[in-house]
Image (cartoon, rainbow, N blue to C red; front, top):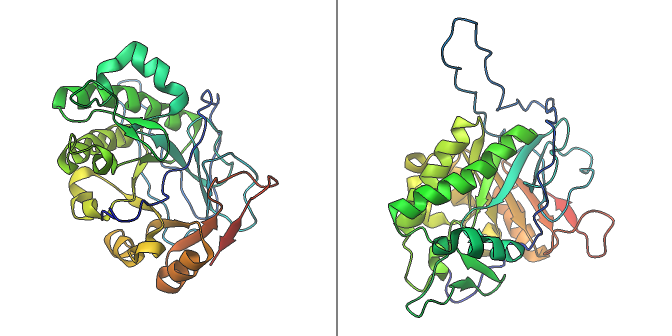
Length: 289
């Protein structure tokens, strides 16, 4: 749901690192690996599709997209930036900024794919001013296909690193596009990403945006990551749509209490600090219902 009167906090700043090498083994906590594929027999021409396993409902969760650290005791699932290693033994969700360009990556976008950055009638970049991120241009089928190749390669990297799921952020970039993008544009791009995720054996999470809950099956989303649904009274909507397979993240004490009161008995709800800094850093906050 759009909230034009109050700019949601939502997206967190982070710096993309090089993809970590190797594959971490994830098992335990009742959460299955989703990227394990059947091995071909010598006379089989094509590999079987890898199994996709969504997270377990109400699995204790930690949101670590601002930097990886040892998860608190009892945590069963984490979300980390695609440049981080997965947490061994847990269900790992890979954060990918799929609809906007990281500030530190803008020069490369300009050099290699300048036409995939959204521009206004004057040729100026259209930015998410709150986080200094240029919007990616999902307005045509051709551009969506090219973007899906780029972001799809990141998704494949998540699978190769050992993640079990992916959360593509900024699904709601159309709300900041000055009318140059539509909800349908982003839904169509998200569908391409869902296909890439499933081909790689990853579940894919809807990141925010209740306006697209009704299209979740058509797009291919398997679960949700909902920031600040307590703030806007939307947590029950996500929980109902995804059979409680939802990770809720709040950033203030009042919103955290609201989310816990609303869905905390059946959905994993955490409170993190706004900058989602690693444990041990000034300002670090972690609470769970």
